[in-house]
Image 1: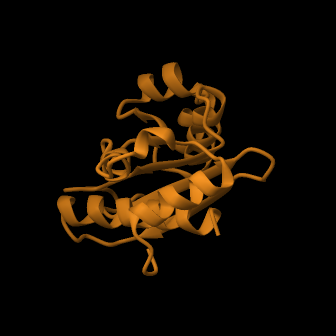
Image 2: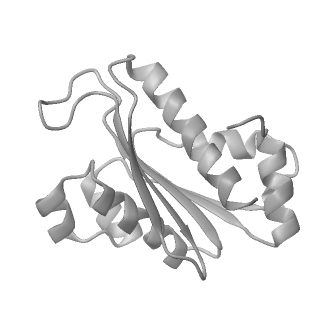
Length: 158
């Protein structure tokens, strides 16, 4: 997170008048938990979507069945639709999404430690990226993905 704390992220969002929502799959709500661990976060944190299954991604965030069928759940296309869906289905002005393979396991085409992120903000183009954390083990991939997502939020609020 480049030296910024979660408290700093919340203060910057407060300063810019932005509410934050999260759309998480492999982290299971860890980003939302990190944000809400700070007392007073309720004026900034709007909501969190934990959409672990494809059905939840479709029902709660409006992710397209065609996108899931074409690209798979662990893809930048799905991360984009998750982030944009969180914007559309909340009162937030800034959202971050995470979908990945925490492990154990993976495949030749989608290895353990691959995590796709989306960042959507009203009035800005949605950004997506993939990070290959490698086979660190489930807990470490989830922790690294959480930190990376918080870093994306921090960068968006600079």
